[in-house]
Image 1: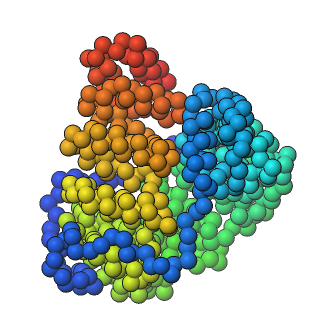
Image 2: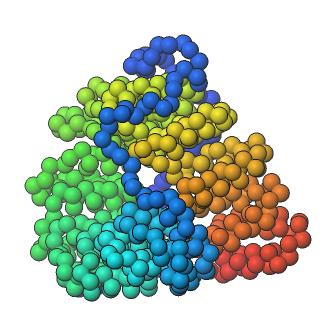
Image 3: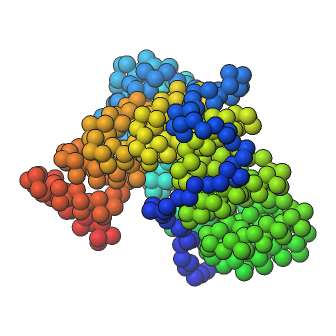
Amino acid sequence: MILRIRSLAKVSNFLVFPLQSHIAFPVISKKYLRYFSNSSSSSVECYPFTNIISSNQEEKATDYGRKIDIDIIIATALAAKNENEVFQALAHDSECNTLQITHGLVTRLLYRFQDDWKSALGVFRWVETSSGNKPLPESYDKLVDILGKMKQMDKMKALLEEMRINHLVSLNTISKVMRRFAGAGDWKDAVIIFDELENFGLKKNTESMNLLLDTLCKEQKVEQARAIFVELKSHIPPNANTFNIFIHGWCKIKRVEEAQWTIQEMKGNGFRPCVISYSTIIQFYCFQSNFNKVYELLDEMETQMCPPNVVTFTTIMHTLTKLGEIKEALKIFEKMRSFGCKPDTLFYNALIHTLGRAGNVHEALYVFTKEMARNEVKPNTSTYNTMIAMFCHLKLEQRALQYLESLENSPYCKPDVQSFYPLLKLYFRCGKIDNCLTILDNIVKKHHLCLDLATYTLLIHGLSKGNKCELAYRLFKDMIAQSIKPRYLTCSLLLKEIKQRNMYDEADIIEEFMKNMKSS
């Protein structure tokens, strides 16, 4: 039905401002920071970093299963070349067959292999046959997402059909499938999935329609989404979220006039614009560096009895910091307080980042160790990552390592790949290649994390220049095996270093890969 609708104009990518790396940061006046300590002690040494979490907090870390079980399964899976070999290796390994398979263990394994679909699929098939209990529907959804993320669409569709037969498909499943289709450029397949909802035992209603519209708008197919909405709205009523989806979509493709018109349409349909509606347009003007409009909209929200929330202020502060407007960024906290808006973890993360960019380490430490605890706001992994990045930027290696250790020992959050990235950059910059290898070992073996494109790129560049071409080449091969496509510049740099060391076979493989990159 819906696929009668058309090919419409292609839109450009949303504007993103780069970080400015050579800004002379001002010393920020204390009047913006009067809620901080007035101590004049050393800005680096005056605060501890381990007392941020109180003993009476109830939230506990996720149970990832016994570490030894994970190590055995991961080692077996990584030794195989494809999903079938992973399954066979696990199925015929006597040690693996004695392990207790728990839902927590499955969750941890899928997280570990979220960028390695072959291992994820092979492990999942092994779990299905070796465990007394079937994996939870959430685990099926995670595997669907992994396959879609790695562009394995045929395998994703095959798994979806299995789930349909076993009555495991939920709206969450459909949401992941539609997003992965749209992200791969197959937006029409996302529409087909919506058309076939009844075959999965699901209904076409406002919630499912909004999922489709949101999927298309996030992939900049706003005009297609609008045409579909026009076709559906006669028998599926919209709600306020429907219009907020379009406001976000129009802003994403830089057509703010349509976003503002949508606010009027929203009112015409009996829905009052909310903080999400206004904050989305504020975000657009932030990305355009049009802060006159930003402050006008803040005033308008106040007069419309729709006060901005913490997300609104976090967006403004983050954008000002990226643009190097540190003094203005720090004023945002005072403005937020004047609205009676309480900060949350994401706002504090942005504030710590802003203070770090300004060189106000003392104040950043105070926010982390005192201010957040006083307001009962818990740090997350990104909070720790921000502190680690700040210390690495200042070349304070030991302080960065202390915060990394604190994160590793936290019962509430654990390191991700980004936790280690600043340390890798620092060590490569200082020529400490052996330290980089230790960090790499911790990422893969201690924390069982998958490397992402940025980390692979950093490692290959750094190791190639640091006379570790053999390891750089192994990482290059590992990227390809996991369907993570290296950048052309990375291939060129590695090829140059490989040739200088007379590694002719490896050079041939890289050149062939680069040739295929160009042809595709």
